[in-house]
Image (cartoon, rainbow, N blue to C red; front, top):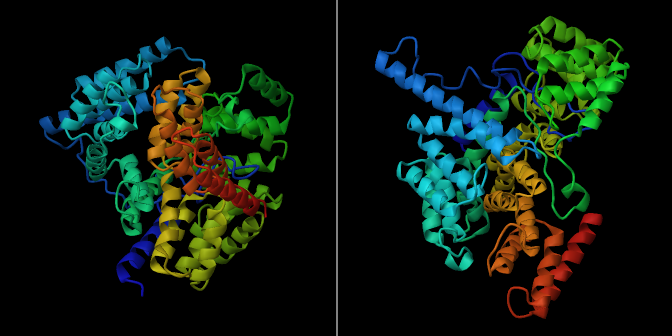
Length: 565
């Protein structure tokens, strides 16, 4: 039996995602999900921009005291945002001193304005040794000060220190204070800290130090997943986050930025009229990826040069930029023209874009049947956005009969490619039994998958950057924190570093590594079972246990065989 409350919320979410705000092309595939990912996402301010609460203080009409407070808060937010971008955009070869000169004045100014968030950030920087020498004593001092003021970030990182015994002179699991850690995680979660909510959701999902409960896990994960959906909807440009498994020798050594020689090669090819190079440079400039500074105007120049040669991908990218007014003049009419040309050339992203224009009547007369036609053409080529749009149309009954089974099918196709809103909607459908049987275990795994695609996933990318720079302490801390949040990749990477005594000094490193491996194995990491077998066989953590070793070696073999089939 399906209750009316969750279903009505589900309908609101579907319509919010499909029809919100100003014109857009629906959504953006995750980096690497296709050979030619579309540029951009839902239009600026779209996906419910009109529905989001904007009833905050208006500086123009507020009394002088309130205006000053408003300006102060806005300034703090601006400073912290700039600091966060500096941390994420930091190059592998940037010196600590140069980074600190740019970073710490912003943190200090925000802290001087009374920001507890800035105090917590300073504590985090001391914890990581980012821009300053690592100092757990100073980290504890600042994080405690922020936590005492009720700051969720301070409580989050304080919880991490208690959970791994890092509040003591000799860190390690033997000195951990799990009850106090859980208390701080709870306070941080109540304060809206998504990473803390993920920690508690993960712990309840697997019964790690708390009662195992699917319903409790969904309570936490669904809140985070909702934030992720809104965040991605509001972002005009979603910068790619590169995920690297340290056990992969080739990937581990791969730098996050292109070398100057590679960029010059692209530039030379583009200048000589190579359309593929022009599109590649256009996307690098649009996203601000691989060490290239973000510049949407320059991206548009490269796309125009390639489009003039008839390149369909360039036309599609230009169309999406015209819809959003990014680097070019906002114009639905121009966008429709480019989409028409590229769709006629068989470009899947353009077919999806054309369908979206017909769906909403942007730059043309609204026509649901034509929208379905182009969405299906694009979907048959595997376009993730078209699959999502078709799923939403079947769910809402737009130009077609309501069909939850078909909606589920298209959301599933898109979800397999990592499409965030499709995964979220699938979770809602499994909760409510729409087009499928009700299933809490399936729904919570889907919400978990969405939650792990939030902006906090940047830590996985910056951890690898720290590793490449030789800042192993910071890399290990970042992987360990993400491991606590339930990221299997982080659990595997933290264990890999521990086994090689990189970034962590403690007599119980093998115990910590085994814990991370066990958690990774439960989440489906086949190789983790093999390494756990080694731990038991060679007695790395305790006395040798050949029976346990044999069990994990067998599981590794069976699961590897299953994956191969």
